Image (cartoon, rainbow, N blue to C red; front, side, top):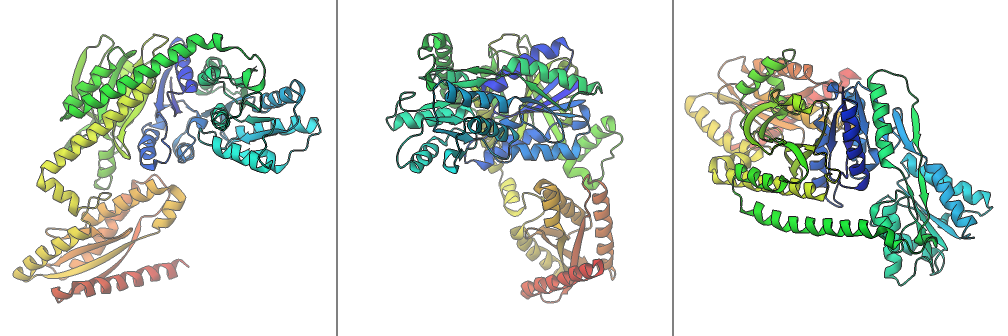
Length: 639
């Protein structure tokens, strides 16, 4: 039985405890669990977020009997929405949301309403407070709405009206403290409320830091509380009143639900995990629990100190490497004794030939022939296992090309059976170079932490530097990048202008006429709006590929705008223009047949013959006019 699990913020307590418990329980139940994980999305760094998102598209959803999603760990840059849209289109198996409700799917949830109700009642009944403010999570999230409702019900029961100025809409993240404190004080002419209840610990700790910075005492001047009971909340001074969800019990319950769904059993759409309330110093209860947290605090400090040292050593060592092999050797050094049983490093191979792809897909994917229109997407699926280190730390440097949707080559795929494997991306900003497959050891302290995140970051940045250096060493490669469109790999405007001069001089010498074809994709905006920009990019690439395969000899094409292409035709036969149109239409149909999404691949064409090479811009303009006339006629026919 195969189950997939998507999670972000892997090194946070929720992710660590969930995966460690699942690892033991999955092995007992003989479940093969693939954890597709990212380490988190940096604030204000969209390019880094795009690199982290690459892990969402690695899984071949057809391989799994159930897919689990920790949706609330994917809080930024629309990562969660992008994943759910992808699963909606491609997943045929049941989907299970953990802690965050996924409408229309199965869900294992926390009792948000009752827990927040009890926290609020504690402030009302035990501490006799009335001016209690509330910080919500992201209000599009179901759990945020439920926690707010629990607060509202408790306040209503005590006949305390909740004014608009008593609620601040937060986002579950760490940086809102100054805004929250400023908002509540401004609404009270510089005074504080009696208490601020936050929808999670991150926001509560941020509020606490801001209050202390402004000289206020907790809980003497104001009380605060959170939700999630993070380790750092227990170590905070004063320790934070919070709601604890037993993540080990949640992990077991989630796997039980997933196994039942994978076996085709009927289970309730929604199930809940019980939570525990911990009243501590931040609300005025249990004011001296620091001794209880001493061991946790000591371990945390040692861990952070070691990670800080590792970061310095990693940066120094990775800066010295100059080849891909040296880079992998460096990574091995930092993974040794890191609590990893075994791991696999898989990297993109930029030089996979069509012959290698055809050989692979004929052998393993006989139902999908390697059509020309599909070649570019298949090339994207190809990856190379470069390194395998087993449980005994035996190193095998490999060079096995395979389809990354298989996760590992057939030679090693059995090593994943009945085990938990963590798959994380290797990228530098938005450039993805591959992924690492980790299998953790039985050591209870061996859990994914910031060390693994640092390693993946340095590995990606170093590979980027190495590959860029290799490209720059070759003048031909540098010129190729300068003259080519990076998305479609046909010429860009610079490449078009340079090649037109060379081709027109040759045609003039040979006495061959030239025609300019202006092409514009039909409906690209609708494709982007309906299926996403990845689908739009795919449509552009397929159109460019179809255009290239419609040309012959010294003819060439270029992408000169968003959805605009141009082609140079050599009029070496009377019917060359008509044959080009027919061939291009046929190639578009072939490309369209390989698309999963339900859209039509079409383009409008305008073609003019060139008589005077000196005024090429006028001919381009004339071809554009004919192309737009063609597009207008199509719209009239449809209407």
